[in-house]
Amino acid sequence: MPCVTCRCVALDAAVAVALRDLAAAADAPLDDAVERALAAPGPHAIVSLEPPPGTARHPHPEVALLVSAPRDATGRRVAGLLVHPRRRGTSRTRGVRTVAAALAEEAPAVAAATTLWVAGDDPERDVALIEAGWQLDREQLRLERPLPAPEPEPVPGVRLRSYRPAIDDEALVAVNNRAFAGHPDQGGWTPSRLAAAIAGRRGFRPADLLVAETEPTGRDLLGFCWTVLHPPAGPRHGPVGEIHVVGVDPAAQGRGLGRLLVLSGLAHLHSRGATTGMLYVTTTNRPARRLYEALGFRPQRRDRAFVRPANAPPGER
Ligand SMILES: CC(C)(COP(=O)(O)OP(=O)(O)OC[C@H]1O[C@@H](n2cnc3c(N)ncnc32)[C@H](O)[C@@H]1OP(=O)(O)O)[C@@H](O)C(=O)NCCC(=O)NCCS
Image (cartoon, rainbow, N blue to C red; front, side, top):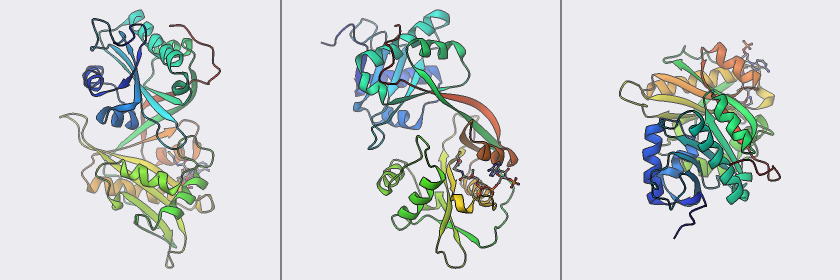
């Protein structure tokens, strides 16, 4: 018999069905890791629900905070928020505050390891999260541009090729870690984390990950661009091609490699059928934002990441 006052449960198959209905009604974009948790429910992903489990209206939650299983050895998790459109005004903000405070109260270790991503500008939602003890950590923009993009121009002394599984992993991770030093998600990778991230991408092909190296020797790996093709969001949309990660070794930056890698990645995505190019960039990343703007990308949405330090005050439900 579930506890009627607790709101947090493991993401089992029955809860996943209810959440999929809620996600369809809410039409909210979910972080990749959260979507994957929904597709493969298990005891390590957890959900904070409103109304709470065990009540007569369960299993038809109207507000849910869905937390992925730990993403890697660091134990970090990501979470997404789902709210049924029938919840409006104070009913909606109360629900958001309740699920966000309940996670911190009932599963404090999980909350302290979680980055909660919310999509789009919504000041009332953000105030509700702050009232529940969460703090704004960072913001990212979703940028898009139509495809095809202009053809890439070659950079002297550099050639591109497809990623070679296992063979390239160490050099690629080294470049990644130099390019993303100190980055909360992309920094400090290991070859096994790269292998796990690739294994988690259904339909990954080595050609989706472009590698730039010195020509003619191929001695140094200089940068990379990982592309991901997403299915159309609906019947009136075309497939979306994402520049998932692009990084250039700091020693090779400023020579046109970033431009070459992004345009080559877009050409690859277009050849696979993508009609829109898309990527996410942290608002404070000026070099990357200038590059993307110069390549015709324009902001479509602003997303915010909230975190909850372990010693944060309890927050209101
Ligand atoms: C963003 C990044 C890939 C750019 O690579 P790069 O090889 O240095 O870029 P390019 O030499 O092709 O420069 C292309 C344009 O980017 C912009 N740019 C690049 N570096 C810049 C800098 N330090 N400051 C401002 N603008 C910069 C400029 O608009 C430049 O065009 P210009 O030379 O005509 O002025 C590289 O800085 C990097 O790896 N950064 C760390 C990882 C990262 O943040 N990746 C993007 C995550 S979304």
